[in-house]
Length: 239
Image (cartoon, rainbow, N blue to C red):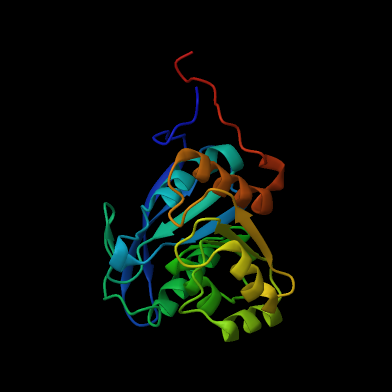
């Protein structure tokens, strides 16, 4: 059975709540491998909620639908403050990336409290800026950035990440609306160990199954190399 955009593979999927230090409750979901413990954890920070970003933004939804089964990964998705999705609406209001520091901390605290192994931050667009600014926690293994605009997060944040020293991988679409590979390579030079990967033909929103497969494969390649490359087909459960 070919894996398509709508494919949902077996997993344990539980609604969760995160509780921030400033008193808010955020809604989310934790997807785990169906029959065994995860080998690593993806903590997903979604795109800009004022432009439709949320925990169900398509790359993250597909990660939760596939990666517990294909790569033994836990996928933790949540709505930052004031953000709505099918799961519900998180308390609070959008704060332009400032108050969201508490949202990132709450997600990492949840991962630690529930013994989720080897957390990696996965940021997409606005979520990359949350990762760079507020994700430098000793708990994490590293961060993977999808379409980083480097607007709210600037040179000081990059310099701080260089000192932090954890792995930093940036997937930069060739046709991005905000930051393209050549300029990204110059900006990320402030982090000598950062890896900047230009993705030919891709756009900021990673629309289309070929782009999604590139993103998920690049994530798995770093987080659980034993599961790379991801299959494009799985056994048909009806056969």
